[in-house]
Length: 165
Image (cartoon, rainbow, N blue to C red; front, side):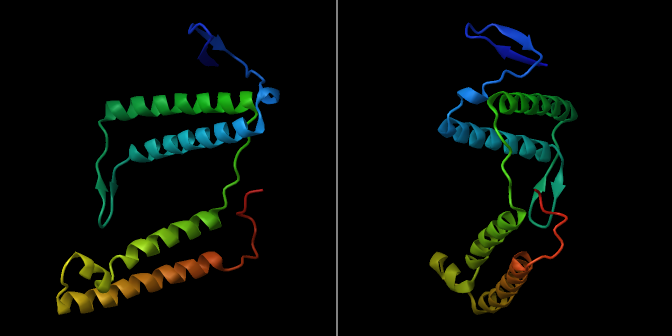
């Protein structure tokens, strides 16, 4: 069941999808799909943000319990509206390639690591010899590990059980 407004702004309950698939032009379908996917990803991020997180360089507390409960409910409501719109408009799921996503992520990480090399830091001021040697060794070590991650991502796989069809 879904509450939606009519043209006059009056809300009413709709218990079934409205089939507008034939009315949606390909360009509109593309924009609507991309926009709703962004909203759906935002929902997933909001759910992720409800939990506390603690790592070496990042720390996030939790929301007040009453906020978290209400946000979970509202995110679920938003997701049900996304489902309604996607079904009514005949929008299809996008197939995401986890290999390509992992590759893009590691390339972005490598770009950030490159900014940490001592010769790049000189753009922000002089770097002491001790810091230079330390960073040169350890930033290279970060890059070596990222390269190893990249090789794993690029490696051909014989087992296709985890690939979405």
